[in-house]
Amino acid sequence: MNEKLEQLKKQYENIAIPKELDLVVEKAIRKNKKRRGIKRLIGAGAAAAVLFITGINTSPTFANSMSEVPLVSSIVKVLTFKEFKVNDGTIEANIKVPAIENLENKTLESTLNKKYLDESKKLYSNFQLEMEELRQKGGGHMGLDSGYVVKTDNDQILAVGRYVVNTVGSSSTTFKYDTLDKKNELLITLPSLFKDDRYISLISENIKKQMKEQMKKDPNKVYWVEGAMDDVPISPFQSIDKNQTFYINDHGNLVIVFNKYDVAPGYMGVLEFTIPTAVIANDLVSNEYIK
Image (cartoon, rainbow, N blue to C red; front, side, top):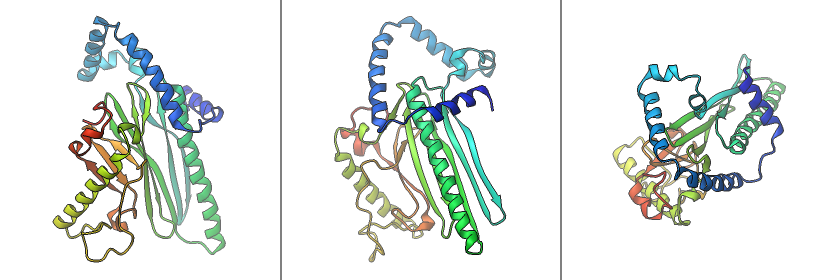
């Protein structure tokens, strides 16, 4: 393990998680306001920075030659910090723990990384308990696969998704996303994007519309939504949660995510709905993130 990972590990073990990540967001916003005042004074230096970054993006030779420069090495990235594994015949587990590196906002970085580590430790601990129970009953098949994906990574947005695929009995799949503003170094929450709670009904109605349209075009698609079929077998989808899982994609679109079984039969898997910006444009706080 290299020096940076050792440093990360020490941070995870020592830092206390704030009760609410919103506290982190508030601190970052205050920090950002100070930065904006400084940025107004930069002038020609900002243009030089743009030329420098353009050189890195367009010329591999230039990028390689600058690999020792702190600016290059400080690019925000996601790496695998730790893995938990079990391989015992019919019982398998593979848990990869992500870590975000090189944020200047170390409170946010450490808070998120500790959350990822704690989530994974809990998964591993629960898996061991279930594994022991299964053995006491005579054995059987059991599996767990957990890891992460980077959905968006551009100049401003980093969207990291953590998934859990559990195959104890029937399989289930869940996804959680964190969407970060890399420039201002803060965590973006769904409510923070909008002026008020009206977004909940706007997005929910658009998703229902998308569900019905998809079912008309493809008979193999089934959603639990009223008006799309004669008999909905369980309680139909009514509304997203105030803090529904989401991310912002590379095109600046809001993407709402539902876990397996949330709004459709299991064979439909994890579901994503891209919300047309025109539907929510008037209710956005700004066009900083959603284009």
